[in-house]
Image 1: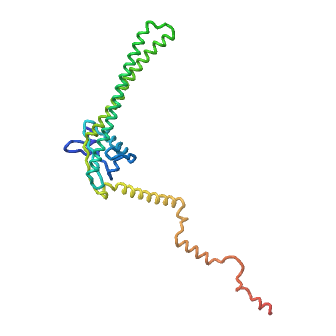
Image 2: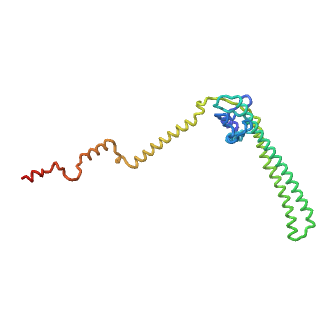
Length: 264
């Protein structure tokens, strides 16, 4: 009950098929592909970020529910690119399933090989036990075959218990993506749904202004209000400096005339 409540809150549900819809925002068709892959669109590899996002969503949705992928595109509708993108997604997950099937087959062959080698080692150990000499070298040889046989059996059990179930679980997830329906919706690039970055930038600018005002306030409190000099104080200080007499030689116009002294 808790799981279905969480899924209904996080994902939309298709009323016709009951599949949970994974919404993918895609500004352009080309953004869904790996930019390093120069192959044709139908055979190009998907973008790693897109694959990682789809895998995260698939891990949240249990296997008993179907999924659907809906690309929300701001580019003009192009039927050819829709078909190419849909085919490339199907081909990507089909190739991944084939790779996992080959890996599972290799694991099965490895398990069979481990069982055969383990059985041979135990048979050899049981066969040579009556005839092995009772010295340390003979006991070491006999115990070595026993231990080697059990190690091979342990590797076979480990591969069959841990590795193969994980591969099969991944194959189920890939097959669910392969069987999922892929749809497209188109909205304008100026839609409010695509203004998240602008809102984030405006909020960051607001926070920057708050930080600047807060730093100025702290600086004001640290220096003190008494040291603040306003425009009127600056003008009064400059006026006083202009009126103050500067030290230096007396003005010659205030001295008595030297010519009159000499005449007298």
